[in-house]
Image 1 (cartoon, rainbow, N blue to C red):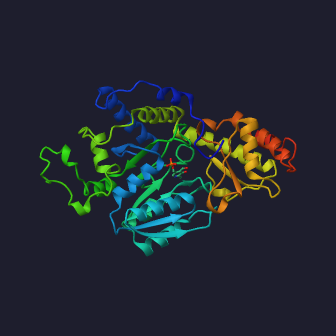
Image 2: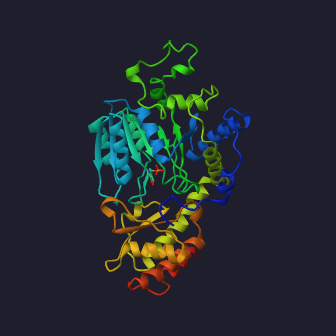
Image 3: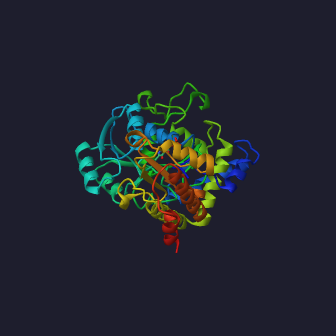
Length: 396
Ligand SMILES: Cc1ncc(COP(=O)(O)O)c(C=O)c1O
């Protein structure tokens, strides 16, 4: 019950144990095409270029940023938690001219703040996290794409922690590039990063296209290739080459991580069988029950509750209690993992998730019952049954 990775859905585990097939086996290429279509529905986009980057979520982030940003490009990174700092760090490593705006942890940006920053910086790209697990905040995105486009910027969004548990509408919200992961609300393991690029973003990537010499009919010819200075500064994360691999060209690049493809496909199938809106509603309901439950135990909740993600809550560790000892007792005595925190919140808050396969009534109630016992054992004064009662009231 931490902020991810979380318990994997048994159907995903079964998909991961399926036999491998060759990368050009018709079954494999059919799975690739099917997976592209599934993630179009998950991201709510018509973007042709919707596929997987092999690697954990930050592989998707690196691929998007290194492919979209050339050295010297101006990028605006609004930071409201740890993962905004990660975007900044990756954009800096791309050699971009990075402009950061920050709000305190526990808050989000208003549209006005974002538009002022875009007007001042005039970036080529705005890079934003939707749900930052470090603070539990969910940045509203409606209107941000329109602002970016009005000022000639592209919008990139990291939805690793929020996708499937909170509304996300790629096309309706004008998002040009999005990357995700499986280990949060999608009930899978880490190791695959679904990605989608708008035609506008594809245009930027295409202008930097280069094909490895060993794949060209004439390795000495550079016809149709971007000049060396314009090339994407990574081979593995060169999205122009990755797109060629996922397209009908099937131009070899890496060897697709077959098991992760099975897994990403099954995660999307599960989500779409439930329905994206139904999944968001399930996360809202169980997240509301967990929130009420921790409050019912007398714990103080961190951050602006009006902008909290549905799938995780951060609570202040009571003064008299040893936070690590409580986490150890939850795990050792009850087999339940809850999360610690990063940076300015390290040692000060716990983070409790209700995401993916764990966004269930039994998981919420058992966690609250266990937490009550562990807190009492640690010397905290907690109301008898306060957590479970409060959560049950939400379910009533
Ligand atoms: C919002 C966000 N972005 C990126 C990441 C990094 O993901 P990974 O550890 O899979 O590379 C995480 C992980 O928790 C995250 O929550």
